Image (cartoon, rainbow, N blue to C red; front, side, top):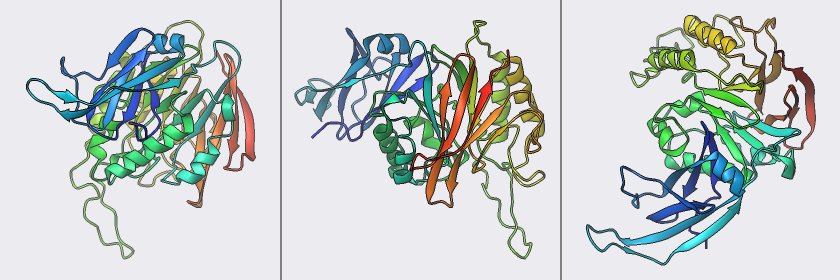
Amino acid sequence: MSFLTYAPSVFVIGEEYELLLCLRSHGLLSVRVGDTLYYEENSGALPTERTVARVRVPQAALNAARGYEVIFRAAIDRRAYYSLFEEEERESYPFSPLPAKGDIHVYLVADVHSLFESAARTVTYFGEELHLLIAAGDIAEVEREEDFLAVIDFLGKATGGRLPILMVRGNHDTRGHLAERFTDYFPADGRKTYYSFDLGRFVGVVLDCGEDKPDAFQGTDKEGKLLPPSYNGVNIFEAYRRRETEFLRSLSFPEDGRPRIAVCHIPPAITTCHKGDIFDIEHEVYAAWNAELERLGIDVMLSGHLHKIFLAMPDDERNTLPHAYPILVGAWPKNYKSVIGTAITLTDTGLTYRFTDEEHAVLEEGHLDFVR
């Protein structure tokens, strides 16, 4: 039996990969890439009292090695002196970076809402030709650790630890008992769930709108009576989004002609399909985001959240705010029974998108040329 409970996940963040590894027991863990060992380190101390480990590796190193080895020693007793461990165990995994030229096959999945069996079939559209998986939020609820582990299991099975994953937080990931621990399991820049990335063939930014309603939101019942505050003081996403604005203002990309892609669970220029409702929020903040994304020359934004599938151009009547870049909204949990996602074939000058279901039927397709 493996010392890992699930296949690894290899997340993209900045110019690094973050390997997520779930262990059956406490112990020492390292990852060998080429001739170099990488560790999960805390100020010189190596952790042993945990079963979820995250190890950062330079993209360039793993891309060149095209594989990695996970090394584990189960803990018997960690002491001040003379700690005891079991014999070393090893498992090796191949790794495939994005192709250096030609088409890049990307699958965008979001709004799974725990429909894992359907999603597992949907994301296999490209089969062995998949190069990158984008998990764009709301994969499950976060009431228990088992919910996080179910997401990890899904991602591990979808990629087998051999492909990179771009991971985005959704608004459902901000609710429940374990909302505050999202960054203990999934990639973040410190505790920030927004960051830039560089995948060689293209660059981009992961954004996070947080919740989809105001921090102090109070709904009403069927009789119009005011209900208690929905979040009751646990959210400060309005301040979080303002800090994200400053991050965007500080961001720049190389002027080298590579595609520039933004990924965000909630599209900030289309926060709702019904203008003026409870989800039509933060116009000033999101207008600032859009201005910065336009300054950065974003070629396309990839999103979910709306439970619809469409490509929104700047003149689309569904826009709640003006924007100059196309927005591909590509996730639909149809009747909360089956998952529809988006198969994307990306080139240096544009992309082809296909909205596909779990049977790999193409519901709609189109092409987008990047305007430079």
